[in-house]
Image (cartoon, rainbow, N blue to C red):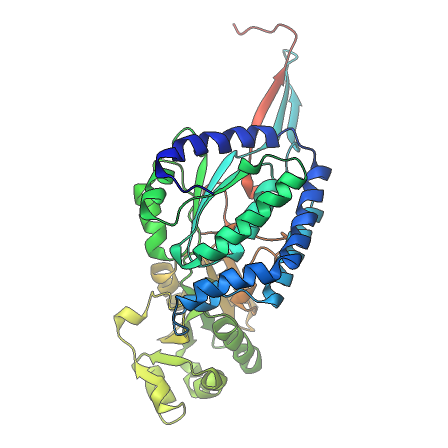
Length: 420
C-alpha cells in the first residue's frame, strides 16, 4: 500500500512496469489467480469483516452510504462467486477484430489490447476493490485504487489479501496499488500523466464532476444515476407495482435505484394502488400537485409531502421517491431528456407503439420496457462483474466489463512496401 506521498510517482512507475509484465501472462494463469482470490475472500472472511466493522463503526447507520459500505458473509460469498464468473470468461485480449490485405500486399490486423494502467476513484464501496482487480487482471490491466476514508480499513485488508494471492502465484504485486485515503493522493492520481492511461470515478455526481474537471488523465464517467420510470396510460397495474417497488427499494444506495416516477395523467386514479406497497418500506414521497391530491388520504400522511423543483432531477440514494404527472408519452420523454443522467430509464406499458417510441427516443445507457432498473449491473448482464456504469458515449456505455477495459492496436505486416 502507498503511504508516503513523496513516493507516489515511484509507485506509479512500478504499477506501469507491472502492467507491461501482465501482457506476457497467459489466460490460464490469470484464471488460476482469480480462483485463488475467490477462495481467499471466503477463507479470510473473518479478517475482512473485522476491518469492515471498524469502518462501519465510524458511520451512522442512518447514512445512505452505510448499506454500500457494509460487508457480510453473504456479500463476500456473492463477491467470490462473481470473481469466479470473471475467471471463467474468455480473455478479451489478443482478439482479432478486423483483418484485411491491401492491394499492395500489406496485411492489416486490428487486435484488442489492454488499456494499461487504470485508476479508479471510489467512495464507500469496498466490494469495488475486488471487482476492479478481478476485471483488470482478466483484461491484462494494472490498477491504482483510490478509495474513500469511509472504507479505509476494509480496502487495506482486501488489497493485502489480493497481494498475497499474487505473490503466491508469482505475479507482480504492483499490478494493484491502493493510494492513501487523502485528497492529496487524489490530486496526484489525477495528474499522473504518462503513468495512468484512464481514470474511472465511481460515486456521487459531485465526485464525478470533480474528477472530470480536475483530471489531466482521460476520464470515463460512471456512476450517478437519476433514474426514472414512466407509467404509461397503457401500463399494467401489477407489473407496475412490482417494478416500481423493486426499482426503488431493493437497494436504495445504488446508482440504479429509482428516483422519480412519471405517471400519465389518466392513471392518477390508480396511483394509490400503484405505490401503496412503498409504505411498507417507509418510502417518503414528494409528489407534484396532481399526484399529491391523488395520494392524499390514500398514503400515510407522514410519508407524503408536496414536491418542489429541487426534488426533480435528483439522485436520492435513500428511501425517497419523487412523482411527476405528465400528459403524454412525449411529455415523459421530454422531461427525461432534461432531467436524466443518462443512466437507466424504464417504461411500464402495454402499448407496443409507445414502448418502441420510448426505447428509440430516450437517450440513456440502458433503456427498459416492463423491467426493473435494478438489473443495470454487469453481473446481471452476463458480464461477470462491472467496473462501473458508463453514462457517456465515447468508448464505453452502460455496464463496463472486460471488453470495455480494452483498446486495440493495428498490426501491419509487409514485405518492404513504401508509399508513393
